[in-house]
Image (spheres, rainbow, N blue to C red):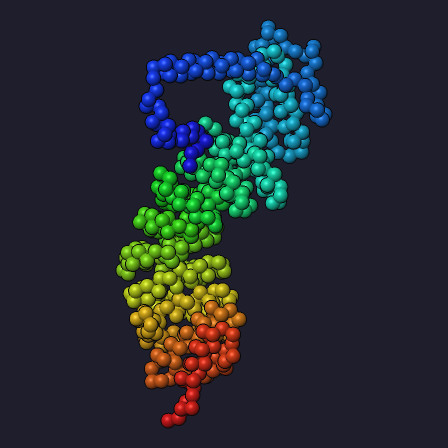
Length: 515
């Protein structure tokens, strides 16, 4: 996608066009040269006409309540130096007024801005150069962008009213704008992008992605932070095209690594949200992220920080990477490595957090790690995570209980053949049941959510099949597991009905209890 500073390439010539150019005679070449000369001459004339047609606006537009410039107010050439000095002073006063707060601040800003406008209208040759040298242009651009930023923060219909201004906001993200103006435009664009997929598509079509990515590389922390925030809003989907384009921009991945490693927590937070959407929407992005230093940096941030605003995107990004690429678990989280111990410690910290999101996300990450090798299952099982997960299964909110159940279930099995039930790790199963997990799984079986009920039923099957000395059915009966399974005797879901009825028949049939 071309950015706002790069002219579009001409379309490639068709074979027919190339052939025609190849057989031109010298007469045609002479005619073509004359046409070019004529075009240049016409272009010069049009520019001169445009310059002649430029007009200084001296009177207010129709509907304005402001007074215009009277004839007697016009400044003559001999007063030019004084006018330039007054213009420079007016710009400084505008800078001061814009930074002021409190009662009367708004009136003062309006008066100073109006005074500057009058100075630029009080001469046949307005003091434009003096105003530019004093810094008026970026100041006025900044204020305009600031206004648009706050309008974009309004209700959906109010945000959509900015559609005509979007090309201008995108244009001022470019390298020719001051960093301050570019940052404010990025803020406005971030507000617009956060409103919905349609507006995101419009911004992407207008070329907002590349200049925002460049701004994220800025050495100014606040500009990089704002750009990262705007990017996370712009790429949040559902179309992964923007994500794939962003991860391919030179320097973006390096900037993510650098900011996660060295930046303050505010900037690291916004960059972590970029990682969340990159890893959620693109296999290409996940592959590049995993093979960079990003996973290790996420783990270190997770372990070291207590900032909830940072921990949530860091944990989600790590979870996306673990869930999306088996290379992450097998090649980075190597049992015995320091980074693996740090990852487990940080996840246990999140499990114990008072924050619901952290507990849920940490359980989800652990469930994906527990679905890996036997070594990873053993690592989690022998850690402090297991008793915490059992507590969450029995006592936490529903969505957390579900994620904890996935982790505990994964700790008890290793995959078998494609059509075979999973092999049971008896040591893990017995310990988890004896630690009080069975009632939690039976409660899941009573859930109206089919996925949760299936999870509970699958664990009951493990318990009845794998608990030593055939004691599994007794344990299930003692916790009212038979009644929970019989709820599915006539259930509309074929899989659940057949599985539950099959288990009841197999383990609680006519021979149940007969010595």
